Image 1 (tube, rainbow, N blue to C red):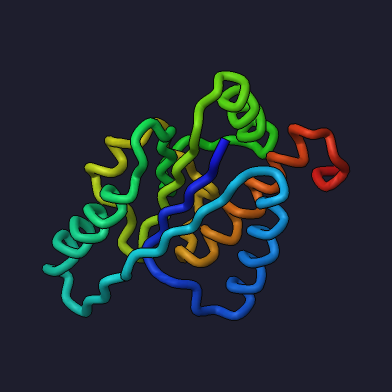
Image 2 (image 1 turned 90 degrees about the horizontal axis):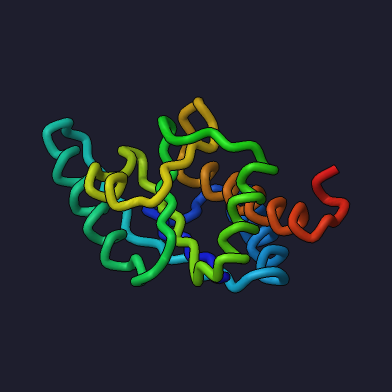
Amino acid sequence: MKLSLLCVGRLSLPFANEGCAEFSGRLKRYLPLVIHEIKEHKTGRKQDLPRIIATEGEALGQKIPPGAFVIALDQGGKKLSSEGLADLMKDHMLRSIPEWTLLIGGPYGLSDSLRKRADLTLSLSPMTLTHQMARLLLLEQLYRCCTIIRNEPYHH
């Protein structure tokens, strides 16, 4: 199975950049991983938010490959333990699902159309996370899933 992360915005915080590089490298030992970043649109006016969310959503949507299982990250999504996410990943591997595409929105979140298009909406935390923190946490959890599936000691 292949993993694709589609993210709004670039990593600008040094610790997030280092952490994402670390866990991306670890994860690539288990599964192919591709990370696509699209431009984050900034605004100072509230009336621009719907347009920005729609524009970012369109850009992310165009990068979703056909046949991928789409997971949208959203604070209100389904809550899974690390073991639960690993079980889902293992099940999809056994069923030969070719790819997981994971969507990380920008500061204003994901568009409604992307959330509806997703096969699963997943919450990493009930708290609000920046897109940089969400990416770091997601990469660590995906790596953790791989070690759980292989019964390796990282998890405990």
